[in-house]
Amino acid sequence: MKLLIANRGEIAVRIIRACREMGIGTVAVYSEADRTAPHVLMADQSFPIGPAEAARSYLDADRLLAAAAAGGATLLHPGYGFLAENAAFAERVEAAGLTWVGPPPAAMRLMGSKTESRKLAVAAGVPLIPGLMKPIEDPSEIEAFVDQHGLPVLLKAVAGGGGKGMRAVHERRDLAGAWERARSEGLAYFGDPGVYVERLVDRPRHIEVQVAADRHGDAVFVGERECSIQRRHQKVVEECPSPVVGPELRRQLGEAALAIVRASGYQSVGTVEFLLDGAGRFYFLEMNTRLQVEHPITEEVYGVDLVAEQINLALGAPLSLRQEALVPRGHAIECRIYAEDPLRGFAPSPGRINLYVRPAGPGVRVDSGVNTGSVVPLEYDPMLAKLVVWAPDRRAAVERLGRALAEYQVSGIATTLSLFRALVGMESFRSADFHTAYLDELLASGDLAELHGRQDPDAELAAAIAAACLATVKASGLPADLFAHGERSTWWDDGVRVLHGRFPR
Image (cartoon, rainbow, N blue to C red):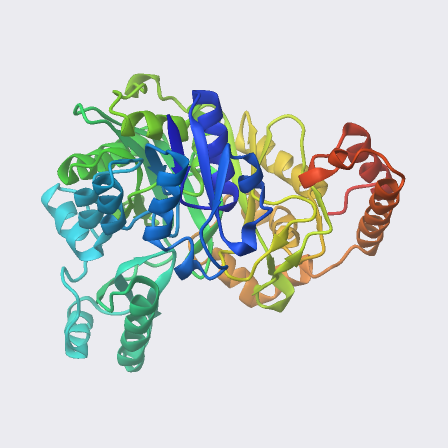
């Protein structure tokens, strides 16, 4: 049995690791920009699929299916992003005789439409934010909605996701312009200009529920995740469990999520997302019909392997999870490490990574798609890795996160590590006093910018010395594979630590 991974980066590496443990062969694909990427080197087989441009490689269904045929794959996992929520692609995969590792295309299509999924939520009895149930055809419809529900409102692309095609409007005079911009983004990112409007909940928390369902009528929820720390509607820090969700609210959220699962005919793993207001009321937001970026924190807290479960469900196996056994244990936090420069408005920072030192130790997990020497291309999402920490409680998890961030070193490109080092020192973060606009407000205030803008020249000098030492040792004639693809021996990691002398904060 072989599985083709129609993706790249850290999620491709994660899927390969799950397949290794399951005895499933792996087939990777790569663009010209990813010829030496870790996922290419780790897979059992790898096939080129075109130039760096995603539309001519990772988004080209014909090339992906050709690679699957060439590698003898019988399953295809889309990862997340790219074609992961494309129902038409899922149908093509199944028509080619492959097993699609994901939900039925009909459920993907239904839940992928924000307006149709809202109708389904109403029918299932799940609380919903007031909003239109169909795309706006004329700006006068927005005016009428504001007359009834007031401001602020949120304009959202019908086929949107990841913060794209969303516009918050606080002034009536901005409605028409925001509608046009949301339509333009919806067409550019999702091929659909449809936009709808809903009431904007003031400073909510973003809570999502992990679900899993099989073909035999069984479904479970695997706790919730706190995803309120976002930049421009894009999650950057996630936690499991949410600091503000207790057992009773967790049960209510889980039952609402399972009502959505059953009403939609959903099978596979997925995520149902909610907004939680200051009074503790929750509202259905949307469903992501795929594996989520932040799935590792649920795995750490609940002791499950969601990727393996997803593959087994695709093969027709019954759920291995039982609701009564899914009890949270400890607390996990994830930071998404991006190749972006926080000091330059989070501008992309492509280039070669000269030194890449992962943190380690108890309760630390790094799901990474790069190594020392990797070239970060400009053509794709800039996420390099996910730093995940687990501890018995949130206070200990925050302390462990600070330690791990201090150990994490990347040179050659700018990253968001300095932002997270600053954030972990903020009292508001440590006390879990945040909402979906929290990070944007911190950045606008300048308080966080001042903290993460303080560079540590000793750390930069140490990284430069370490890189020079590495080049010298390589030139000495030691086996080249000692350093290949970032796999360093213990003495090399220790050497970097000695050169640093201390870990910068």
